[in-house]
Length: 263
Image 1 (spheres, rainbow, N blue to C red):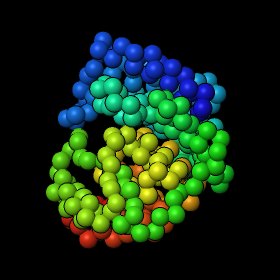
Image 2 (cartoon, rainbow, N blue to C red; image 1 turned 90 degrees about the vertical axis):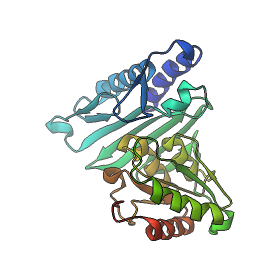
Image 3 (spheres, rainbow, N blue to C red; image 1 turned 180 degrees about the vertical axis):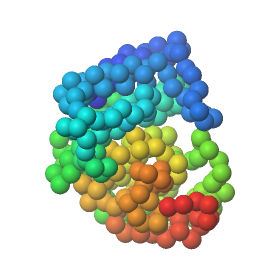
Image 4 (cartoon, rainbow, N blue to C red; image 1 turned 180 degrees about the horizontal axis):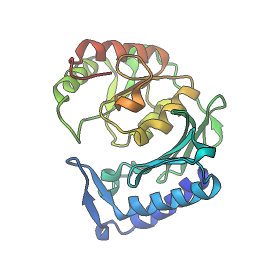
């Protein structure tokens, strides 16, 4: 996974030197873009992973789903070759490669690679989380008034924007600060290493968060859907943080979410 992430980063870094000449297309939703770099990086990742584990299934942002063979039916790679494409297109240096391996639907291995800062976040289920081979833990923050939170504003679909803004307003009054950097994989990695104390977002995809969620769990944090359950990969709605901040986030979100906004 690390080899695949580094190979993708080489493609991304080369392209970053000539962003003006990139081919850019729109996808299904408004403000959701894909470049030739996303596709090339994803192809490189899949080639390396498939060569090592040809039986495993794949769920990748650009090329979609391919099933596993009988020998690897419990395993699936979940790949975002360039999380933060809009940032990348604009030269905003906040984007990453995200790769997770799930076993029976649950993240088992994780890599998030910040190609700009050369920061490699890794985690193995039961084996801890690391940043460039240094063990990381979530922060000790336990009071919302001292918490720095990360979030992702709705940008693909806007049916839940009113509920989101109500939650944002409540938390903005209480927290020390809120940041929206535009790359969920890195936001979650930042929770894992203590740079953020909590994070929430609606409507993300499994490839956006699968690796980051394992990083947080292995760093001593908590992750859930909006109801405190474990369906965040399925629903695309995620809450994460230090144990104390996580519970306070959940309470605020639960008090403001509408019946249409499911867990």
